[in-house]
Image (cartoon, rainbow, N blue to C red; front, side, top):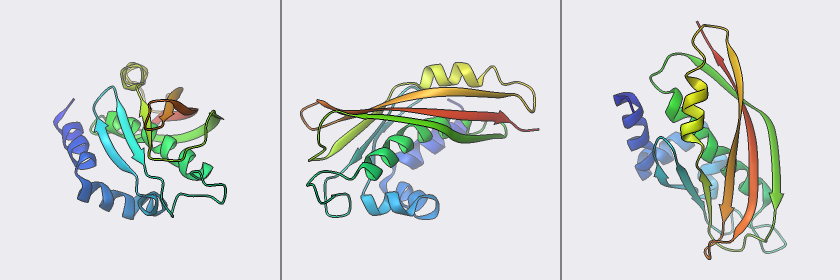
Amino acid sequence: MNPIQEKFARNMMNPLKFRWFLLTKLPSVLFWGVKVNRLDQSYCELSLPYRWSTKNPFRSIYFAALSGTAELASGILCMLHLTGTGSFSMLVTGFEANFYKKATGTTRFICKDGDKLRAMLNTLKEPGQTATFIMEVVGLNAEGNSIGAFKLTWSFKKKG
């Protein structure tokens, strides 16, 4: 990681700085109580609590909170890799989710696609070049059982 990426990772791991980031960029996620458990070049893990702000009438975590946290798990990894490497735009262009169990407790979201993402981003050398990349995120309950699997298609464009 370059020094700017290391600083970004430290800031995301710092609870106060992460909350400030959420307040300024994603206030609804701040409302949900999402926390960063781990962030490095290859791996991101977030946790989403089961509480009044994430609960639906069916006594499980609302699907929007699950989906939003899955997007953030992949998005923070994208932001980490783009930080300090030039100017890029990024956008979610596809989203697929499969739910297996009710999320009735704190749920962890894990994305392990950082190394593949870095390799893909390294192919974007010239301004205007674009690429898409599908990132997989798994949601796990406290017992380690999968509550859902998410596939997010990110589009990247190298700016001039």
